[in-house]
Length: 435
Image 1: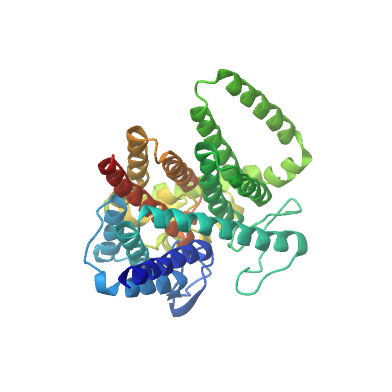
Image 2: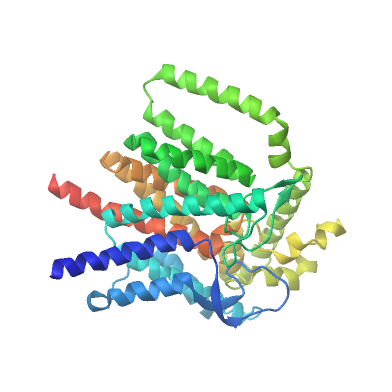
């Protein structure tokens, strides 16, 4: 009887994790407290609400209530969450306490999910949930995206109704708020299935790989498309490292395909927009502003300007931190004044100071080291470790040019994949003991 209850319990947990994977792109929540000063996009949002992730967190801990233990999983991600939460105590006076509280509230939710998944969820349960969660999410996002791009149909409470157009082409964004967010999400799913195909020889994964590539192409996201193909090339190179004939054929085929792709008018219109140089200049200026804030005084360098406060700080101190900008159209642009810095590392540096930045970088570095350490010890988890390595390389690349990793979707992906790695570490120890 107890065994049946145990199985039902973990089937429910699996279902909740699958649901979290599918819905993490839907930042829908019942607002409790809203901060609406100015039409600004804050990294961690403008409100405290009852979100899907909060509901799942409460349900998960409630289901495990009798067996729950006050254990904190020690890792750089945990230390980052604790540091970000305690940043509310930093001696920063020129900040919005409401926005900092919103950021701390989000950090508590993500930490709670990470801590539970890292301690209580087994490798097999994780693998099952990721497999089904990514399959359902991919089909769901593709349907939503196709309906929006080709039929101009928005699904209530799922699609936000907005569109993204580049040179007359609608860019696919699924249920997310931006094609860049969509491309990050799809790239993670793509890596999961390409690793299963390359390292586990699972031919069933091919159809999901094809769907992911189509989605990425229709999103018009240059960085994620190039990065995912580059990582795939490295994986194939590793897989067939002793087969030089195969490598030569692969290089020639890839070269021919890229030659015709880059010359096509479709590629030029969807990926190389007319305002490409303007976009690059705008982002460079954004980064320059972030660096100016970070190095402007000792307080900003050590403590930052406050969690979730970078956009408001830019607006209130714009004259002093943008002294190098002479183009009035850029100075008054919505992109510069109303959005977070398009660089996640600089957001962390500006909001949490040098120690927050170092802790944030350590999340990526430590997980890459752990995954590669397992790869050197055993081939049993090769597909899993290459998937995790690929994910954190993608996160690290995306962090240089965007801020989607600050959104709920970005943090939930980091939490799930980091916790998955922790389950592999436990399974590796168990696997060695069995041998």
